[in-house]
Amino acid sequence: MKSHLVEKAAEVIEDPQILVNLVSKRVAQLNSGRSPLIDTLPSMGAADIALTEIIEGKIKIAEKK
Image 1 (tube, rainbow, N blue to C red):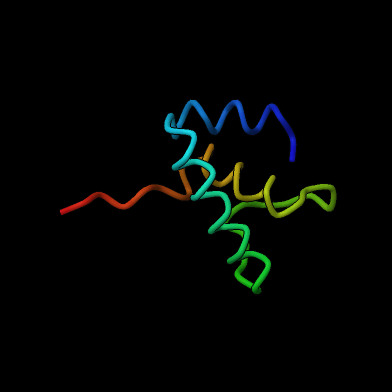
Image 2: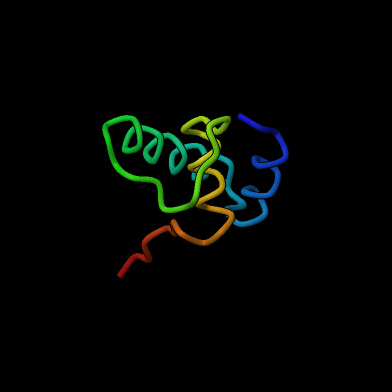
């Protein structure tokens, strides 16, 4: 996991616990076969993909009703 991606994602999702939970859930989805929502490079791990998706606004937290 690249630290600069963590820093950028933390600007989008400011609560560290929510960021960790969101990344963990997305990593599990990617590892179970879900397709990335971004263009990826071979050097990117699942956590890097999840963080980049958050940074690019592809993944958001659902609003409570």
